[in-house]
Every structure is written in structure tokens, then in C-alpha cells.
Length: 218
Image 1 (cartoon, rainbow, N blue to C red):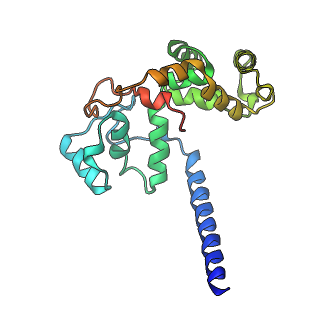
Image 2 (image 1 turned 90 degrees about the vertical axis):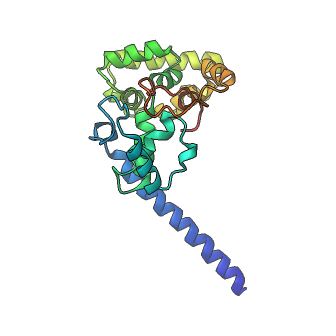
């Protein structure tokens, strides 16, 4: 009986601990990571750091240097000194690496069309467009976006024949649209070694990372 109580207490402690971590993580979501003045990133999030500084940061924050192969891998390293909590580094990395291609999968349009939509609303970064169309507060949308999202729901409903599409809130619906986007599924299936390149930390075009855009994991 005593052993059973110890196990129960341990489980409760674990649940409470996880809840506290989750609550802490949520507190960091409101910060504007795209407007942060990063030491090693320019305004377009291109990396500007010497190899020596990069290696020092990686060692300081216990990154496995031999596993850092791409721009995607490099971003958490170069911003690791910017914040006090690892959760903040994680959130900032996701928002920085978010691409127009990723946005296009949510909206069932081409990457170029997603860029044009971003331009229409003066969004410099793809994640800004994502924040806009994912909002459950549709009062922030103009008439163009309201009509766009109505048409998108109809398109996704016709393709999936899933009635719940018509009653989901915006976040639920756009996640559903991403998962079921036939173009994303096709691109995912054809994706092979595109992300297995040499370290592209300093690459001029490294702001594009197809793996992040295609995989449904965020």
C-alpha cells in the first residue's frame, strides 16, 4: 500500500511538473521574436557569424556540432545566447524558419501566391501572414481574407468530404488543411535527400529549408 502511494505521488508530481513547464512555455509565446535585435542575424534572418564564434556557442550550449548540417540546425545555435530559457529559443527558431512555402500549404495556393498575399498585407516575414490567417478572431480580417477563407473551406470540404471542415475554428481548420493538402503530401513523398546537404549555416540562400515546410510536426 505504501509503495502504491509513493507511485501515485510520483505520478501527480510529474503531472504538476509538466503542467508548470507548459504554462511557462505559453508565457513566452507572446513575445515578438521576429522584431528582436539578434546579434548574429540580419533583418532577413541571414546568419552572420565567424566559424570560431559559432563553434564556441555550440559548445557553450551543448549542441552536437557534428549534427549541425543545415540552416535549420544552425539557427538555434546562433540565437542560443539571446534568451534565458530554451523554450524561447525553440519558439524563435520556429518563427524565423517559417517559409512562404509552408504558408502556401496551409492555404492551398502556390508559394508565389503566398508571397503575393504577404505583400498585399505588407508582411515582410512569412510567419506574419501565418499569424494573420490563423487567428480565431476573424474581425481582424478584411473582406478579401474573409472571402478567401470561405472559398478555402469550400475547397477543402469538396476535396475531403469531411463536414467538420465547415464548423472548425480557424486554427483547427488551417491545421486540417495543412495535413490534407495534396500538394504537400506529394512533395513530402518525393522529398529524399534535399535536407542532407553540407552545413549551410553561411549559405546566402539558406533561408529556404524545404524539410521544415513539408513535414507536419509544428
